Length: 578
Image (cartoon, rainbow, N blue to C red):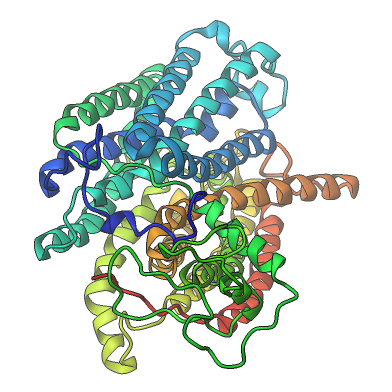
C-alpha cells in the first residue's frame, strides 16, 4: 500500500489460495471441510480451555485470594477488557506481517503458558494467600494476597490476553480461507461453517458452565484448571497436524495505512474545488484486481473526502498507478473510508449497550452465592453455573427465531431477514434495559428475604431459579445484539476489512468492560462518601438493585442515542466481485 495508489486489497475470502512458503507459485485447491477438523477443533478446544478457566473465576478470586467483590469484579472486568482489545492488535499483526496461521500459532502457545501459570497457582499453596474460614471471609478478616502472589496471577492473565489476541481475530477468517468461494460447494460449505461454529461454541459454554465449574467447586481448583490446560495443549497439537492440508494466505498489508492516506490526501487538497458534475478522468478510479459488477462513483456523503481521489496534473503515471499514494487515492479507498465513518457511531452505541452483559459473570454470581443453590433434594447448582440458563435460552430460541419467526416476518415486511440489521440490534438493546430492570426487582426481593429470613450465613431462603427471568432476558439481548452486530459488521464493512470488523466485536466487549469498571468505581466512591455503599463486600447490606437500576438508566440514554444514529445511517450498497 505504500508503493502504489491502487485500491484496497480484495477480501481474503476472494483472494486465490496460496501455500505458506510461496503464495505465488505453490497454489493448491482449498480442502474445505477436510481442513475443518483441525481448524475448528483447535478453536473449539481453545474456547473450552479459556472459558473453562474463566467460567468460575469470580468465585476463585473471592474464595482463594480473599478479594472483596468490588476488587474481584474490577480485576475481572479489566482483564476482560484487555482480552477483548487484544484481537484488534492481533488482526493488525496478522494482516500486515505474519499472516493468520502464525498469529494463531503464537496465540495458542501464549494461552497455554498463561493456563500453566494459572494451574500452578491453584496447585501450590505458596502462590495464594493462607486459607481462611467462611466466617472470616464474611467479616473481612482474611489475610490478602501479597504483591508477588498478585503479580503471578496478573502475569498469567496477561499471557492469556495475548493468546486471545492471536486466536480470536484470525480463527474464523483462517477457516473461511479453507473454502473455495468461487464454487457453489465452497460457498455452501462456508455458510454451513458459521452454523457449526456457533453450535460448537454453545456446546463448549454448556460444558464449562456445568462440568468444569463442578470440578472447580466440589473437587479441586487445580484439577478444574488443569483440564482446560490439557485441552489447550491438545488444541495446539490438532492445529499443527493439519498444516499439510491448510491454505495459507500471504499477508497483504494493513488497511490502516490506506485509511490514513485518504485523510492525508484530502487534507493536502482541501483548497481545491470539487467538480459540479462528475466527468470521466477527474477522479482516480483504476481497474480493480477483479471485475466489478457495479462501477464505483464518488458519493456526495462526506464529499470533502472526494478530494483525495481528485486527479491534479500528472499524478497518474502511464502504467495507471499514481505517483504519490499520500496525495492521490482511488475512489474505492475513499468510499470505504466513508463506510467506516458511518459505522463508528453504531459501534459507539454498542459499547454501553453491552453494560448489562458484563454484570452476568460478576454480580449475578454474587447473587447466586447468597441464594439456595439446591435443585431438588440432592442436586446443588454451582454459583458459577447459573449462566447455563442463558445458554439454554439461546440454544432454544435462536433456531426457533431463524426457522419460524424470520420466515413469518419476511412475509409481512417483505424484508430479507424479517427486520433490518439495525432493528435487530435495537431490539437487543431494549432487552438489555429490561434485563437490568428485572434484575433490580429480583435483587430487592432477594436482599429483603436474606435480611428478614436468612440464617447466619446470610443466604436468602429463595431458590436460585429466581434468577431465571434475568438470565433468559440477557440471552435474548445477546441473540439480537451480538448476532446482529456480527452480521452488521460482516455485511457493512468492505469485504477486504472483515477481519477488522470481526475484531471490532471484541473491541466492543473490551470498551464495555472498561466502562463497567469505571461505573463500578465511580458509583462505589460516590455512594461510600454518602454513607450508603451500594456495592459493599456484603451483598446483603449493599444496594445492588440500585446499581442495576443505574445501569438500566445509562442503557436507556444510550438507546436514545442509538435511535438517533440508526435513523441517520445509510446502508452500504454491496459491490460484488466477479
